[in-house]
Length: 53
Image (cartoon, rainbow, N blue to C red; front, side, top):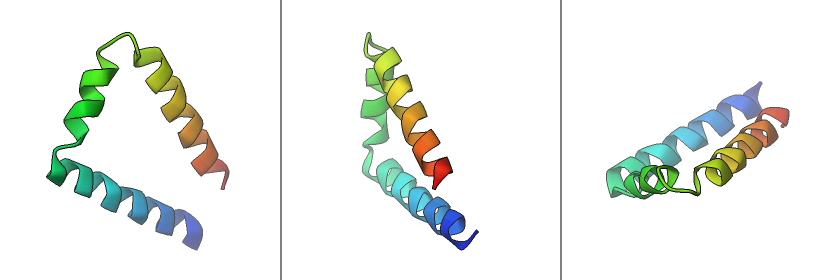
C-alpha cells in the first residue's frame, strides 16, 4: 500500500512539473497525429506495469 501511494505521489509531482514547464502540449499534439495508436498502446502498457507493482 505504501508503495502504491508513493508511486502516485511521484507521478503527480511529475505531471505538475510537466504542466508548469509547458511540456504537456507536445504530448497532446502528438496524440492528434498518426502516432496516436502507438502513444495509446505505450501509455496503456505503462499503466499496466505500474499497476502490477
